[in-house]
Figure (cartoon, helix red, strand yellow):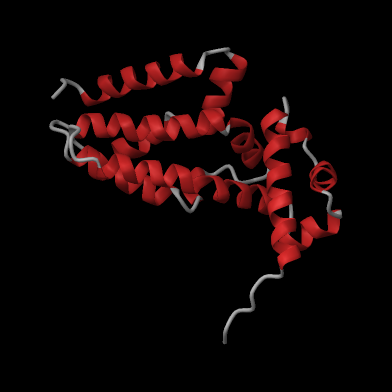
Length: 192
């Protein structure tokens, strides 16, 4: 059976809701304070529209994250498919791309954790990121267990840690990126 096309007003409402939620989470000093009422008002839709479309706050946040993932996934593909860099550099670049996403979206990712979407290992994108990183690590000389190492390195860029370091400890994004690069060098041992 063919799926019906979404009505134009439903598409507009979805885009308005996602844009409003995106803006509210980006400027909020406390992502938990952004309510469904706030999002509905900013989007110019009724609160019922949010619940019919997204189910609940977690569903809305999940949809917003999914909408933001495509540019990240494209950047990861570009790093993975780049031919000129060493496996070590590819690992560092993959982690840096992911860290930049977490830095730029830390309020949204924090809201996701508060909405019960906190297990990153259950997220749709985690397995593909892990596999890309694991494959790059498998090419780095001296990496004993690429599977575990990929999990451990991804844990170093969890959203809750990024929020803590930047917002609570006042670490600059550049300092955090440099610290991660140095940590990767420590984990991977001697340079190529």
